[in-house]
Image (cartoon, rainbow over all chains, first blue to last red; front, side):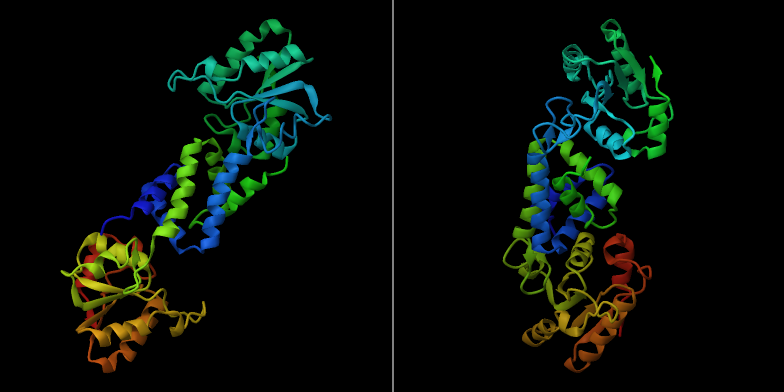
Length: 198
Length: 198
């Protein structure tokens, strides 16, 4: 019995998700066949909506459904402190715990010789622009606690040295090699509190 | 930071898939945000296509993209042997190993007092119609090896007793309490070979 082309296409799509192998993707695809029509419509709509409604904040690069993100639009946030993160979801991780009252800057990745990510692939020049255009006293580098994140942090410390801005790094409360988004609230809070000058 | 409504909708959809909890669904939803537009389009299309193109064969109830399924449309298949299964994906499991040359009949479930599945919820009358309309010598009951599947098998044996058809049950080569679709090829083959008259 040949595999249906539409099922193959769906299995293919599920496999693009993190941690999903062929067998699991197959199981999911057949589960979709058993779902009610309206639930599958809802699912397909949600996929499209997520991509059409959510975009990057033009100021910081975080995810937003509005013109500019909630953090940048909030006058109560301390605009003199900018936390630099690698990915938009890292902003969500910090916002969930509510331990930071400054604003963010999303680089869009981390320097990596292995994956060929150079400084030109990251939103660094816009960080410079922000520092020049407004009074920034501290840049907290919260890139991931791995080789790429460390390299990026050291690089930023070096190129920001002449700007007069205090460059700090969140503390090694984070488990090495881990992902920011999976860290628990306490670990993230401790890491923020224990930040040091690079 | 409030959760975006479109992300919440997508997390909700991922959670309907087998074995996916909230944390995993959330991870998947944010992964979708990072995907290329065309891949998300492809994903949404695949979901819709699966539901619009694949339907149940009007004869046996298996999945098909054509008017009638590949097995029912094949003149080389032995139409005197009907294998009764609970779900359409069970047909795919048997077809993958190619150990059966007869045709199928999908009940659409199994009798269950717990879930309130009665004989009226299963495609049993159409099985009777098929037995009356064509020469059928054997009905092989391949419902799952659990309480519901056993109850269904015994019930079918009882109501088919007067039709003169040989009713058999696939052997207990299948691990008890397991799911047909996850069984390996050898177990499925052994179970088929060792079938007994009920």
